[in-house]
Image (tube, rainbow, N blue to C red; front, side, top):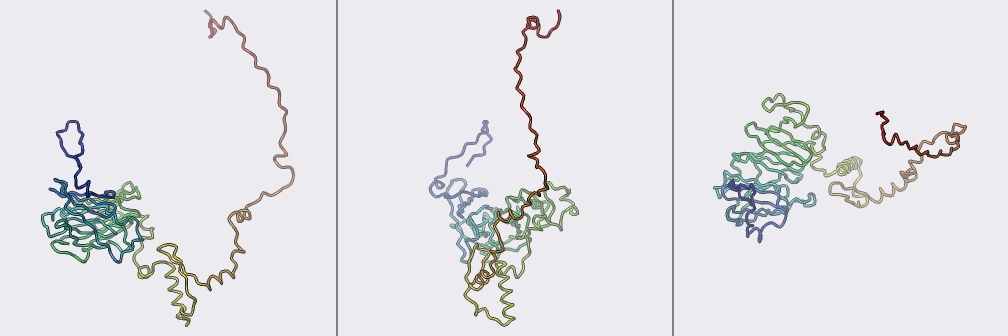
Length: 373
């Protein structure tokens, strides 16, 4: 903590003494976010998912906040997913001790609404997207009626939180006003320009872009085409950034993609449908052995498939990379006659002449430039 004093003519602000509660019961992991609310509330979050609410004046701890684990959560999909990277206070509700005053971007890809009084009470918890992507940033409007979130995959969501968790707990998420993908990598910062209804986003892909609050693409800083936030006709909308357009994660949801976890599942489902039409049953086949190489793709092999593959002997027609290079290498053609090495001429080396020493001249020694006097 540093005191903001203008009386120090040396322009040096020394840190205040450490809080006793911080030394004994403070964070054990890296602190990722700090949020303050007048007159005396301070909240900090860490990498392990712990939120501590402090009294800014005395330095005492109000409460420790821990999110309860979700039974349906797959902890293998994310690394460091307990981290809470952003905290924001709803300052208009600080005086209301029955409402939620603090919003946290995590853990486990969920937005949490906390009541910081009475030991800390969780008023709401909802998943932002089905992919359980970690949230990287949060921003609220000055009137605490809109909440914007950005995640590690570049998606932006806008929520209407007017009256949400205001005196009562909520089991459903708030109304979603808009949702779009702004970047192909994690969003690092967001800002809301309320006077113009403009959202500014920055990302790890080294771009800064402007959007309307409805998700319409205005432009990217540094692009060749000019645009004006006060003239909607100059917006790039309805077009979107090219990198976002061609990225596979930008594909819209489809029933097949929602039910099948990988391409192999879709192929196996189609083959089973074909077998059912031909009158064959999958129960007559040998037991299938499943080998999982990662959490997203699963390959299935049985003994019959392996035997048929060995009978075809594909290795007889194949060759290694080095052998293939030797076979495909273009050899120089022999056109007859002497080669270039045989046509080289030989010359005798002459003896190096001895080096003659310069003649010493007294006149030149007296006048090196040789000017007459």
